[in-house]
Length: 233
Length: 233
DNA sequence: ACTTATTTGTTCGTATGTATG
DNA sequence: ACATACATACGAACAAATAAG
Image (cartoon, rainbow over all chains, first blue to last red; front, side):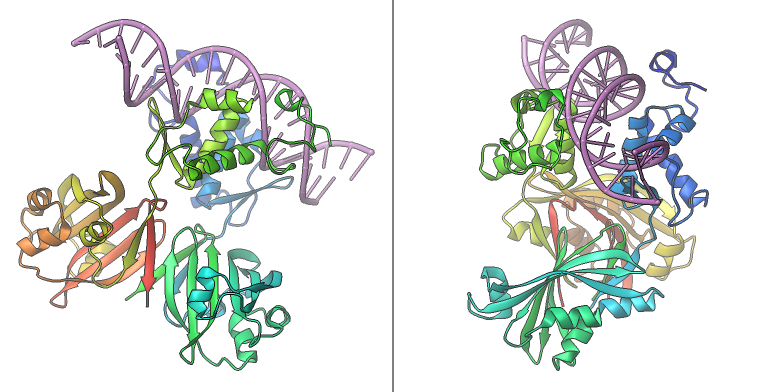
């Protein structure tokens, strides 16, 4: 069945093969794809047919399919990889924000393998906001760690962490070895720590606390689609 | 690297009017627009030039501009209105999630006028999740209020609230009159209430509590771009 | 109240770039 | 090197909502 531009022009707005009239094509196709995922036609982690094939299947232009997939990707339902294909994303993970939230624990309890990869590390001078939260003077040397934390290899959040360079000399190497912020801190004799403040914006910024002295400031950017933040008061 | 597209033909790869080469056009244009907003060229709440005009200004196709604007709209920097234009969004509002968070108070303290508009109200039978949280049997009649809360007329969040139909007979009218959930509850002799649980997903669901008896369940969907949720523990 | 122009939204088409396997 | 698949960019036409006259 072909749906050329001409054919669509003749079709009255109230007679449509898809559910509702007055809804744009790409929305209906996005719905169709999402329902197919829900029904298990496309499995979690599985690959969707190519854009051209989907387009042919629905009898629409490839761009229309792209618009639909783009909407799903935006919501984290699927993930498009250039040169490879489009894949169904895994379901979100509940991420409770408590004073003693540990990434590794949460992921582990969900039956997934937690890990962290160090993207970059450098020594920087303490800056306005970070310095204030860490209660150190501006200019004090800090270690800045950019990490990517993942569950079962799927990236969940990117975090930037600042620590005192004096107290945590080679935090980078220790983190790489331990793959865990908690274990890294334990290596430096930080037995316990708690979250002091959490801002949820497009990301998440938290300050942790040990022995009543702020030891660490971190900014974490979650994949909003793959993580569900839970706050209990 | 060959750059053959018509609009780029006069532009050598190393002499670029925009910052970095190797970055897609729409990204650079999105950056340009955002910087213009930051520099005050386009004012908050103000209107952007039409897509065609922007396209002409950058010497690109309208779709490229649309892609850029779409990216900005996704992040809440601008808001496109069909038939009208594209407008610069107002800055986000910090929204602390505490046990005694009151929408009106928060907005009021930010120096803005808080209000709520009743979109719809109906009597429904208690349902699985809502019934469980309200600790009532399924089937018990509830009043369901769909409200849109705004600051200075700008919609900030859409909330769906469930209350006991028996205890809050005409909640809808009272809410319309008072424009505030707190004042509405006060009218029914609920002097104080606190949040019991908050889930942050794509939206926000909270349960409030008075006299140790759950009186209200609500699901709130925030404009993630206009609101910044703040959690302090 | 109606018409017209403007503006964003959708859909198709075509071509090319770029990463993957 | 090659085919495949997604990404970017251009162009054209029409739809739909809004604003202006």
